[in-house]
Length: 216
Image 1 (cartoon, one colour):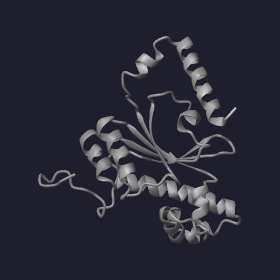
Image 2: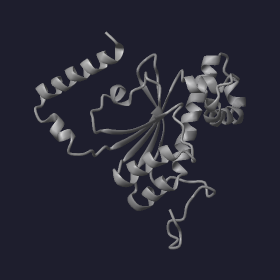
Image 3: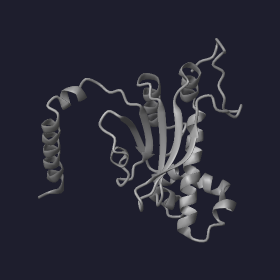
């Protein structure tokens, strides 16, 4: 059997199982979504948010890219962020990386990877800035996994620096932002950082929402 056909058959079995447990399952699903969480994670196929958190459909709004980056010129991510924060009203944003990340591994090397090099440049910059700390670790794996953690902390900060998040903090006192790392070896999530609404923002990145002439 061709692999894609296996997926279609599995989908039929999944749908039948849901209907057996709850006859109106898909009717309720079609009524709309009201997720509490926005998940920004890595595209790695081994880190599916719904599975590793045991969440159900409608609970987590997702955006995934290589190495879970928050880039201020990435209109795809910014559109997801704005929709989740301003229209869905999510109360939590989870920025989740994972140990053994292939994107971070590639960023620590010198291979020519075409367009991917441009994307991973953001991680290379982090490696350069934090090299003195990262290089204290005695194996490549430990250095890489520390960079994974630093990358999560940096992307959380990048979220805080957006006018989207700051605007929601000002108007609604939400969302709380979390930085997590997933271990492929244990299946467990590590809680690295939590940033509550109203947390300190470097004045360089802080927007003035009390200015009547300001624009979002």
